[in-house]
Figure 1: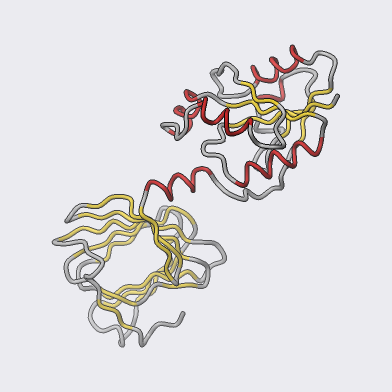
Figure 2: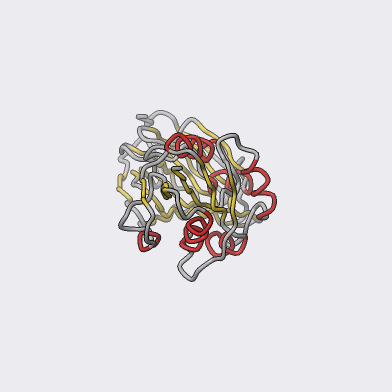
Length: 258
């Protein structure tokens, strides 16, 4: 019998995981899911969303899954102990460890386990969904705009922290604020910043910000974030001042080119 083993926290389970299970099951005769512990999730993400017993019940109920096993964590956070457990349970069968698109033989410690076959890019090279994105969307306020989207990460009367995600070829409106300053830190990708001290119809200053570059926008300065690049721009925006309200905004549309 050809046994396929996959591993993960699957916290929370999503459509991408189900496609992963479906693809892995199609390769062999039996699919075993090695489910990581709550402690493993705490070390990796800081906390778990669903406890092991809940995740186990859900994964067991999925059509493509034949068996779910727990296993002891090791210092490297690998599933070596799970593979050894499967080898003991099925000594006369072919065992294959199936990995998703973000893993390869150079970055998995499980390669050291003897008598195990390895398969990569199971379920495709692109993640259909992300547990981290789902949890982030659940934890923080999220809103879509014409230029992309944003998360509200933290807020008091005088401080607000956002993550702005500017889509390629999009731009925010040319705008200014009367009661707050802003600091922009690029966490992913690149962006173009347009600014004008007094009159946005006069000469506009343009600068390019790359990953980890930052820019400060003082109160009442006209400004605009644009993304003329091919990848999304992720920007951490820190607002601070007398008030940090969405209503504190004045827009200028004449010089918008996006």
